[in-house]
Image 1 (cartoon, rainbow, N blue to C red):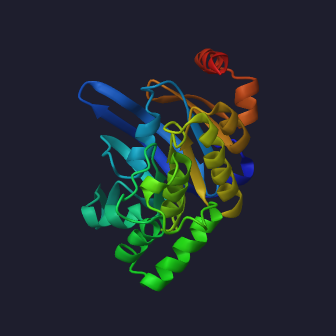
Image 2: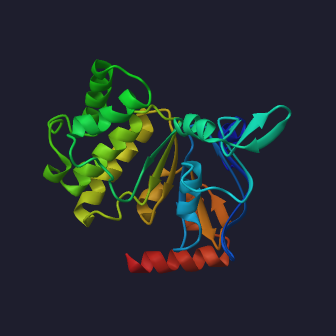
Length: 266
C-alpha cells in the first residue's frame, strides 16, 4: 500500500502483482505485491539474501519470474497480450519494454575501450537510432549534469571509481528511461567517493521526472532521499512506510533488529 496519498491516486508506474521467484527449492521472492507511483523514490533495504536485488533484476528482465505479473506504466512487462489472453513475453516485447528502464549496477560495467562520451552515446545510437550528432549532444549534456564535463574524452581506466559510477549513471539516463534502478551503487567505492555519487543521484532525483528504486545499505541516504522505504526479509516486504517514520519508529520486530544492527555498525 502506498503511503503518499498524492502518489497513490495515480496509476502505478511499476506494479508487482503476486510475483514469486524461485531458484530450485529456494523461494527468493514470495508472492510480492508492490506498487511504485510515477516519480516516487523507493529505497529497498534489508539483510543479504532477502530478495532486494532480485526485485531490480526482474524489472530489468535479467531474471524471469515463476508466478505473478510485473507491469510498467500500465503495460505488462513479463507478459504480453495475445488475442484476449496474456502470454509470456517474447524477446521483442522484452526488448521494447526494457527501453523504459535504466539500471546502474554495483560494478560500473563501462566499455573499457570507449571514452566517457562514447560510453554514453553507444546505446542511443544503436538501440534508439539517434544520429551521432544527437547522441553526442545528449551524452555531453548528461555528463555535464553529473559533473564530468571536463572528462568527456577520458577512458574508464583514467577515471576514479566515483567518476566511473557517474558515467554509468549518465549512460543509463541517455536512454531517457521512465524508471531508474540503482543496485548498491556505492558499495564498490571507497567511503570518500560515496558522497559524490549520492550527491549526483540526489540532484538527478530533483531535476528529472523519474521513478527511482534503490537497493542500498546507506541508511542515512535512504532516510533523506526516499519517499518510501521497504524493508525486505525472507522474500517479503516485512514493513514499509515513509522514510522518517520507518527509521524513527519501526513497528515490526525484525525491522527493529535490522536497524539496530546496521546503525550500531556505522
